[in-house]
Image (cartoon, rainbow, N blue to C red; front, side, top):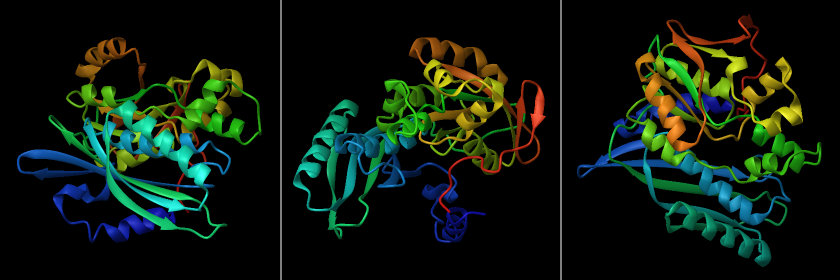
Length: 315
């Protein structure tokens, strides 16, 4: 187990309120005065989630977007945010960050409600935290609702953000669209809201399709079977990485894509495909749920050995 898994296991003994969902979900779901609040918090750290030379405005956008992705997976509508900000006494960097934050808040129709600032030593990596508050008016999907016989679905394409990271690090050249997927992720808010009544379980893909599918399976007490050749890849990614098994595995274990991973009964398949057309967003079947535990991966009909790392974990 990773240090992250160990810590979460220890914290679950403290998170006994029903709103915490046993710390097995993307967000807390709190009933207050007849209203359903959806609460999430994410932190991004320089050198881990963004590069030191990433544009400050893009860092601000990413901070907002990764939190919105958690809200999207709950089918919720965002209201406002609280932010913690690390000061390195660089007025130009701060100003560019604020401009990017303003752009993100306007783009997603949310308000800055408050937060905190802290000073850092000049050599310390920047870090930023955001708490996002949303509301839900209908079902709030969890990770734990998948059942044997369900199909596994994925929105959009994956692998693009990791390819964009390699471009940002000057390891490879590639399409601007890949770099944008890394720096400016697009949370699937409308898709999440419209999928919520149709799915049995849903979460966002932040750490890799295989790792997050395993997390969904573990939370649901089932086995996830992923068809690697059905995991959707963009034309830009295929041009960048190719279409062999290594490229497909790389895409399925890469983080930062912020797509939606969800399960639904067979009977919902036609509705999901119609919704895909209505949204103009690919919603692709990538596997199925079986009795058992853990995860299995097939590629072109052949079950293959799991890679050493299913995705990104904090060690």
